[in-house]
Image (tube, rainbow, N blue to C red; front, side, top):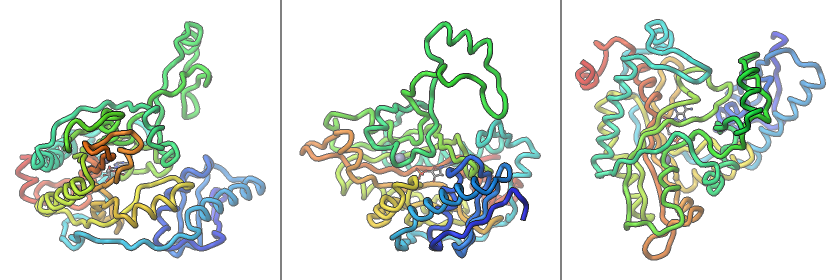
Length: 396
Ligand code: AMP
Ligand code: ZN
């Protein structure tokens, strides 16, 4: 074991269903951590560190880790995972990590950690898969909307976002409108030691963050008034940002990615029915596209303090289902989309009502475009001869 590796035993073993969720949160525990691994058995945590730690620092890190494990696991019980579709056995021809080939062929280049430029083949596949998600939108007659990349911090506060997902936020700021500040910045700013070298009091207070999701924009635009119709179905695509810390190691998790959503607003029954129709509509499409995948109940990646309660709530009320594609090269799965029901959460917090005065219910079908392509290439590789007919034809 090298000096840059630390091993801990959690005070209580981590139950199997929480191993990957705890592991992903360890990336946010301390800046000295470059990678974290929780053994499948849940009784050992291995951390890779930037540099060796002295005894005091290692003990302090240990206690931070123990707190995380305790907060996420204490009193938790295994959720009943509901599988709604199972096509995991669909045979696929490829079993390598496509990343090396994508980089070698210039199809993918990393501009900054988690920030990628994609070349023509990847981009055509993004457009094609998006066109299939647009078929879903068209089947509902969804109205097109355009949403900004920045999202109001004031509105996010109204929906308690800072408590649920503080770890993955990306803030938008600018220089304070002050001649001295701007001149000083222009003269002195430079990129050093992995960051911009400028004094932190040069920057404005945060009014906006980079959007972490798409559908929130629609709810914000409808706030504080009755819904103008009995229900609404809308579609939009947007740049989304989730800071995933040291988990940003491959195309599986990007800091900046694109999501196409179909958004449902109305009564509880209306939203639940549309969510189900969306899933049924997509099933033959995913099948035709040749994906080895399944759809199962899931929860959002809430931060440590909120995790146990909120994840259990989502599971109990079946608020989220994920479309999970197989990644044969690592014998794992990756969420490429989700079918969500938010109950009347946005209606209540944003004061949006139906004609009878009750809060609106909302839901969405959300698809990550880069992940869909990455999962497809992980299953089919870059050689178009090996692709399913429809995809081959669409790109020829
Ligand atoms: P969610 O709202 O978390 O269900 O996200 C919807 C979809 O967006 C997911 O199923 C993924 O396809 C995609 N997505 C979420 N987070 C990321 C990420 N960090 N990088 C790439 N795609 C993501
Ligand atoms: Zn959504």
